[in-house]
Length: 194
Image (cartoon, rainbow, N blue to C red; front, side, top):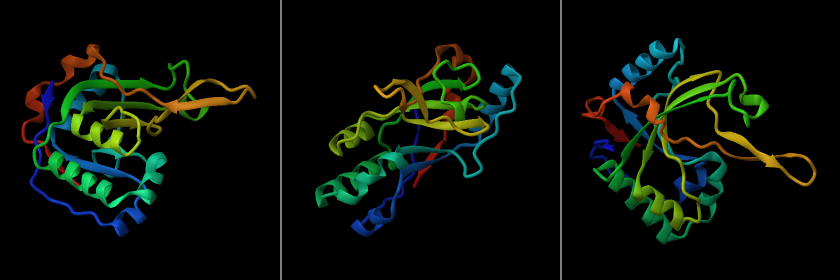
């Protein structure tokens, strides 16, 4: 497991900041990420493109954003401490690359059947602990490296008693078969910010 190195920025979110938030994430800056995407595209004969807004890791997703409306003062302080710890050198482990091909995925939602996504699977015990303290489940942290047709966030987990799809977050775990497409040198000098 590799670690991403962080920047030195400090944040201090206030209650009014959270009242406007729908999501919380960190920016990832590293020119070699584009090289990893290129290597993958060449190896697979694809043309996945990076997101126009750049690389980031989502910590609290838009579907979980309701948590921001009911934060206690202690939880606000915990979020600030967690984010500052991560940005200033807290542990983020790189677990490996993963790829989802919606055209081949058996339980893909209809809206995702034409999509493909390459991501870098991450973990941070610091972030997972914060999420647990906020009453949120453990999250497959990741950086989306490249997409075709859009990102894939959900999958069909089955049907309910009325025959409607039960939707759950799609798993974004590392695929050991893709380990040869990057090395720890690809992440030297990576910068994380808000």
